[in-house]
Length: 229
Image (cartoon, rainbow, N blue to C red; front, top):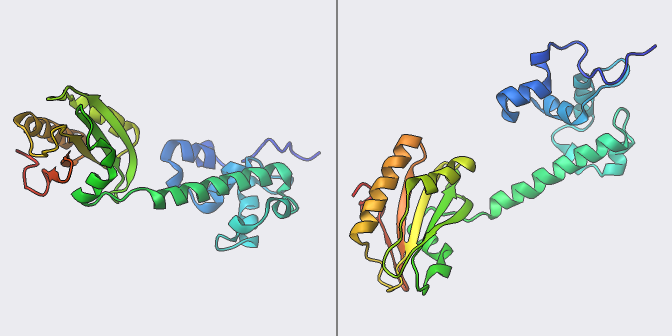
C-alpha cells in the first residue's frame, strides 16, 4: 500500500521542511522550489513535495509558471484543480501587490510631501500626519496622529512610532498644516521635531523630515538643516 499523501516531507528533518523554515527564518530564506512546496503542501506517491516542486519548475522555467492559465495548470501531472487554484491565487496576489508598490507615492523631496498632503491646506485646525516609508522612500501608509486647536497640536513619539513599527517602516516623515497659511515653524514645532528625531534614533527608524504645510508654500526642516534643532 502506498504511503498516505499527508506525509508531505517523508525524508526531511522537521526544521528542514519548507513550512517550518519559512516560519522560523522568513520567506526570503527559501528557494523557489521550497516556496512552491509550501503552496502544494503534499507530494504524491513516490515523489515528495520538494521533488514535485522541482519538476514543476523545470517544466515551467524562468517564471513562466506565472503565465499559465489555471485550467492548463490543473491538467499538469501532480497538480490538479486544488493545487492549481492555490498557485494561481498566490501569483495573482504577487502581481497585484507588485503593481501597488510601483504606484505608491515617491516622497524623496519636501515638495512631493507638500503635494501629497494638499488636502491639509486651508483646514481650520492643525492636523499632524505621519508618513511611513519603505527603504526606497515610497509611501507604505499615512496616518493622522492628532488634530489640534487653531494654534497647537500635541504629539507624543509613542503615537508616531507604534504604527511605524507595525508596518515595518524604514523611515518616517511627519508633517502638519498651519491654519494661518504661513509655514514658518513655531518653537513647539521645533521641540516636537527634536523629540521625534531622538526617538527615531533610539528605535532605528529615522525621522527623515518634518514638513510644515502652508497655503502656497512649505517649510522643510531637512532642507533648512534643522532636523536636530
